[in-house]
Length: 405
Image 1 (cartoon, one colour):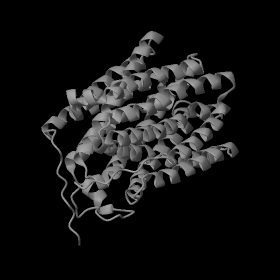
Image 2 (cartoon, one colour):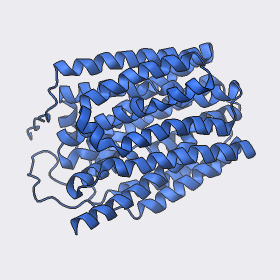
Image 3 (spheres, rainbow, N blue to C red):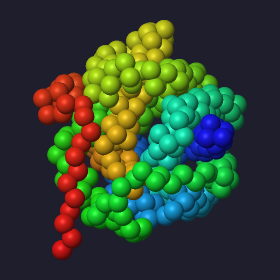
Image 4 (spheres, rainbow, N blue to C red):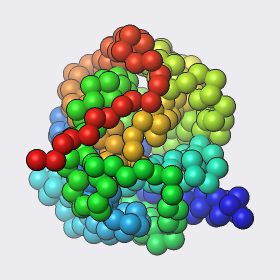
């Protein structure tokens, strides 16, 4: 019986991941190119992408704190999906830089906490109902991969204006999938705590409990630097590959190759994490990032670029999984969404925003050599990851409770 419940739970989560990543693929792969298509300069693109990432970093923790106060996690997800529909629709009616800037920020806000909440729901569901989290998350990656290819083919056939209906369609199916999200089973084994035991919409004490743990924050900083090294790739790879003559469908395939590698790692995530452990996964991700961005900086032949794209399995997926496993082991269940959002706020927000902005400035001046900036970030992340050995023994972290005043 429990196995059947777990299977149904995993299927519903997987469907939601598929829907969320379908629209996200178009935004991540082709939105910067759409901005350039509409006459924006590389500096303006860097500013839009950087500021929207920064706003996400500010909004995500509060959105997750809000989500932690809901019994059913699909409720806040539906709210944010509805905002996504509104902002994707608004892109049809704006053509000035400032207006595009504002709408992009709202579109970014709409997705800022959805994936962290889904991750938290899936990780805790996997723990209670005994299914593999990686097998649910990989369907999001499969969706991203297929969507990147299909969107690229359609853009080649028509033009980049096709991106707007793509984003709107993605927002609508994400909302529909969210209606069927499962409910996390209650746990009788969960012990009451002072922090976050009541269903508060803004459990600020709980958030402070997390950020005041120095080892927890040190690990998140290491992860954030490694993931922020992807900034030039996320922001300007499509624009650069178009400049050197690659078609949109080939660009979609290049992105898809990285996602295929990511999917394979997610498919064997349980064995992989047991083999290495979270800390070694993060170290592996950092080392792979140094190699990947160094290769990409030299505009390598296409076959070598495909090989570099395969390293996405380690630069992103291994680092990401290492972070999730650590958070799930160390954070109390009532604050799991908040912890996921703090992690996302740092690695996909503050650090990524700064790296995206400065990476964009470097790209506008030095083109593909901006990837050397990404490689340097990866080196710094590797140093931090290696340093974790001296401050963390791999065991569950102890979170001191905040005394009530």
